[in-house]
Image (tube, rainbow, N blue to C red; front, side, top):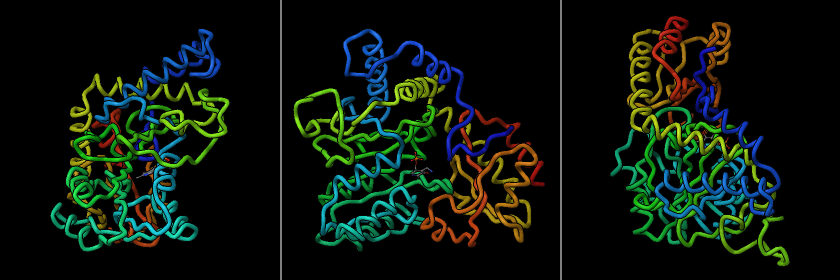
Length: 372
Ligand code: PMP
């Protein structure tokens, strides 16, 4: 199989990642942070080591503010529902995934929160900041945006948006589902208050573990309550992260795999991985654009995700044909209806090619031959 669906989840997982899962299953037992026997301590060490690695990767400098969740969606739900209050107004970008849009819509229906959408596609940083300014109201409380789109390679200028938020007293929440492991992130210099990311996409871990990274002094209300291993006599969750948000047993093998995925990326170098993905992207984009019946969406943005359609052929049919040739891509609406509207894809969506660190020139050549 040739796998070009890395925006859904990265595949295959590198060997050290698979080995880390097996090691965690062999060496860790009990509950991390809730027992004093050696297997429980091994689990706790595994979790702490990963918190440290994630904190360093995100430029947070505070492992205790790395919270492990089940996925990005869970992390976004904690941040969005735990930080916003009745009467708050929020600005979101037009590239947002349903993982941002749906929790917000729920708050709009049930919790008196309102939001506006700011345009991004085809705009310069100055134009994006001007669009934010125009939509900023006296009761605007936060900007929530993705770092990188999941349907094309457009990215948002996080540092500039972070400065805007600081200057206007707004919270800045970032969905890094498609950028963690692909693009550099520095929460401090980008002035990000809360960042959500998956373990299972660009960071190369297995599914089952997501990340919520909290800036200093950011303490959302809890979304889930239960056992935390500390302050057991209290009827409330602890006041401090990470335990405040980690009710129940953590997915230790998934956390171990995330740590191994980060180590793998570090060894290869994030820049090197990115450069290779961009090279493959450009070679595919340039060849696809030579086919007269192919429409490319936002092709000027270079990255790991290329979106296209063939005139007169349903995207699902293209994906099915590619699957018959042993090539995995995804077709349809990709859970991001706002982004599809922004890019002007037809009703059935489009075909998405998404690259990962293990893709090769041979994969790109095989896709090209199949499409031709
Ligand atoms: N945001 C974006 C931009 C995404 O691409 C995705 C995954 N498709 C998510 C959020 C949700 O991620 P997860 O599946 O880890 O909850």
